[in-house]
Image 1: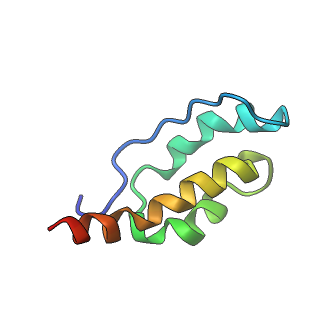
Image 2: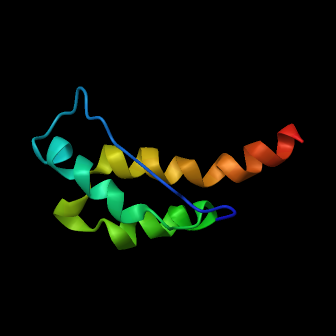
Length: 73
């Protein structure tokens, strides 16, 4: 799948709230999403307690991977 997320796994380390480690398994719901769509897609697929602010921020940063990859070629 060109530009699509084929796998994702979150390993929670030091996080401030108990909801954050509990949200880690939910990132699997992003598999199949286009990387370019993760900016808004993360919040749509991991709303409320399904996500965590810190985790969501890190996942939304993945949106820029295609831009960075294009700069390498």
